[in-house]
Image (cartoon, helix red, strand yellow):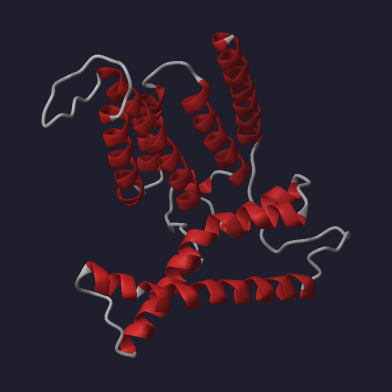
Length: 259
């Protein structure tokens, strides 16, 4: 598996060996529990006591924390500043230079940051431990239409694909003498020669993919076969049934609690 077009991290671990559908339901369960359960700090508990142990089991803790840190930090800082400083009526924690952070806004911001961290870590854990081709085969085996399965898998690959293209374009423009480092104005001027080829190249790739999947009889109604066999066990099937029950229970409990 080429990691340049995917966030999948090659490891020999128990988490990697789980069936893709088991990990898919696990991700959905954690996401729903973090957002729908009424407990204020549930997202942090799920991250500390479930996500981190799973990452350790999958031998990807360092990669996961690094990715979550890079993505979540800018969002977390902006949420913290906006919600604490510009909250309406509330209890002021202190006042400095005309600014007075509110206790209620700070609590709301910390709760939101917990949900952001849970969402990012949940998705990263999934993409780092599930091979895209295995996921697509698994989705098609349970009856999902090929077009929908393709959309799901492509969505997981879009970020690394854009990163790879942007890096290639950046190197090419630098070799032509484009200045990409220095002041903010210099970096802003370098955006157009980078973004324009990136957008055009992405549109061309969409057309190439469409032609490729049509050439491979992607929309054929006949039963498909695969040389890849994804191992499954009775235990994992039972675990998936339990996860479905937990998801339904979380939704019902959240609705009843709010009503």
